[in-house]
Image (cartoon, rainbow over all chains, first blue to last red; front, side, top):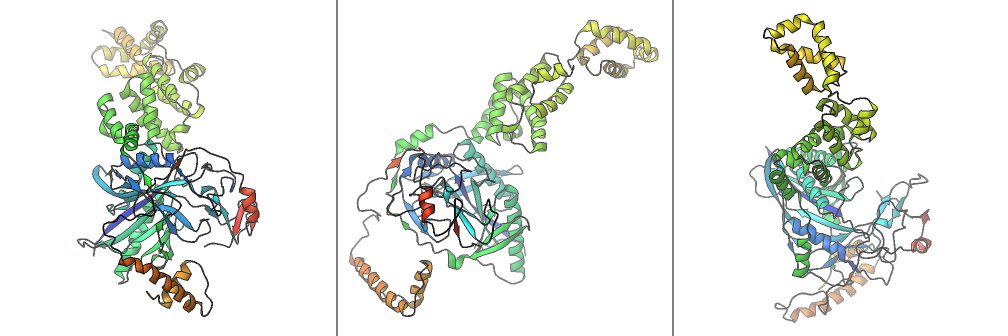
Length: 480
Length: 94
């Protein structure tokens, strides 16, 4: 029997506010343990949460960018459970009335386009962090709690079960991540946990309408983990069914070292969260004028930018798509275009030379030593005839390594192209005299031999002769 | 509305309460009485009334996104049953 995979994703995105969602503690990552905590996020008796306005604005941005309906009225609810990283014994979240409803995200897998529906986006607070080894003493045998993250604002973006493969899930997540980064509401850092993804995975026989029992997978903090974890989980469920068993509704953790999922707890007993409206918080009311104001200030999104690059800069769809796949890459490209002008040339250099080097080093573009003015400077040297395109590629590699300007590198290495006819002519004369047979054959019509002479000149000038000029002089001097 | 002993036990488990012998019956009866009292509200016709979580419709107030450094760490850690460095120490999880 062949099975169809059904996947829905729940994505938690940490919002880039300076302070927490319900108190004024800093959200900065990496502060000393429990340094960013106060009576409100520590849940001491008698405190009251007060909602951060920016959090609401960011959630509206996310909703508008993904085609959601923004709820005029939404309500915060308590999700009750006990865990050492949850100081209040409940998490403030939204349940029946979330801030954004509906929406969609367009994805493409191997050139095939598909629309993935969103169920909702809701606001909630993050929990603290549990450490299973003490960070300084390295002792084990207990757990340690750092509540700096408790109360950091999150949006949870819940997709419909529209995804049909691990590849689609990854494409969805990449698209969503790009949108959040473009919106400047989340840094998208999966390693640090600012973007986290849980996957609900089930399988059903092809043709069956009813969904199978779903399993929730957690603990995947990279695109690769998500792809591997879903592949593994689908195989596991297929085996369970083939052996006549039944899939149990449960939460499983992805173990990226062993490449397996491990059962965490059975959902049948655990998910009685007894949600109820939080009596400490009044309903969140959002009027049209607020929504309109946020709408007017929405930054340009990947799709719009791509279309603009295609129409304004005459880039191909595939080039525009790659350049807009991350905001920092698109910004880099646009900065280059602004300085240098020729969009097509810039895009070629970025898509081949620059991206290859970034892939090799694994560095994000922000850390690349060649800044837009540096790359533009290099291209200007080619245009001025100071260096050949071939030399430029070598210079570029040195720029990536050292961060020095093309001009300085060329001067330092004595690379400057020889574009002076009075320097080249004596060299060329000498070479023609030294190769009388080849010269004769060229004059009799074997024009391919021009390459031989160019090669000789390049050898003599250590590659520095201006190719166009060398060609021109050779042709003139070899004329019968 | 009468709660079964299993329901009472489940509520206790969810609230992390350990019940001694006899307490399931004792609290079961008290909880059932509370529920029966609440149940009396059912005689009111509420179909046309919008459900609300608050008596008056006031929107939530906001605060601006500004950081105020807290000096609560020492105070709270001092009250923790166990600490190690600046971390709360708890029983091993997982």
